[in-house]
Image 1: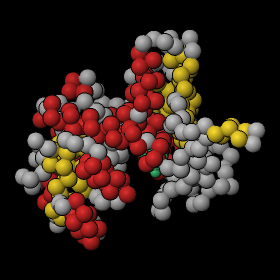
Image 2: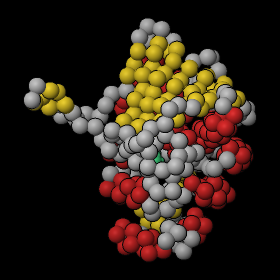
Image 3: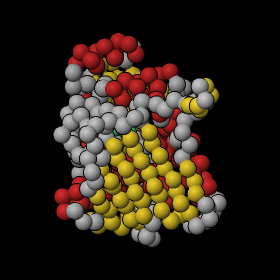
Image 4: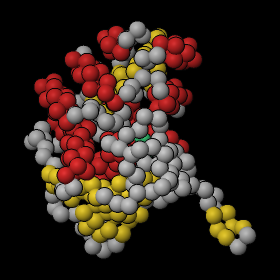
Length: 334
Ligand code: ISE
């Protein structure tokens, strides 16, 4: 029996996932769509032989939909996710889970009251083979105790309407999550450090931003965030341990030796750089629904990421490290 998925939000990532759930993941079928722009939803409905719903709420209420995928604008995530919880329906929500940590805390509270997980958050990097290799090596004790992480997140461009805060809530949020996951630690405090600005910036936002996290055990993580103007879409991560280091590999690409040089191509955007991780993410999501037990990034992870984002945005203004204060982690997420 295929899982009947309804998609709310038919923008760039919604379309990517629609294709993925139809053509890559055998366990899922897209049967319903909704978009703020009705003609876009109708077009997708026709392409995928799905029903076009008049509203996201109606899609969520439909008995023909087993699970909902939320890929609409960030400000609408929390309302749709809450509606799914009220209906006791699985919901996969792209990051960020909500605009505020309070909204995420309410979702956590609701799931705990229900007694089972329904939410998975789209932190796709946890499904990337490179990051998984790093985590495995850390858990095997191959580099001893991890002491620090140097990372970089470089983008060529951003969609129209980008704002300085998005460098945290849409871009560095990936490092906020992947680092907590790799180190299995929560943060103590975080900071944004002002650095010299690049002339290769297309908008009126700060670029680059240097973002720092300190974990509760004292590990320090630096993340260089270039929101636009970079030479490629390039993501780097080096974990420094007591006994060695671990580096995130670049995606496989032909190595060309010619004209006395050695060369290989880097990607231009996240969709191609992390394509395999997205495929694995949805395959494993579908498997876990079939097994009746979600195991991917949870509402708790979405909540912790939002609290951290809030503290970073505050730090950019205050100029000093800001504390990351979390509620007690409920048993459901342990
Ligand atoms: C986008 O939302 C992402 O998720 C990408 O990973 C990030 O690199 C990009 O800057 C964001 O806009």
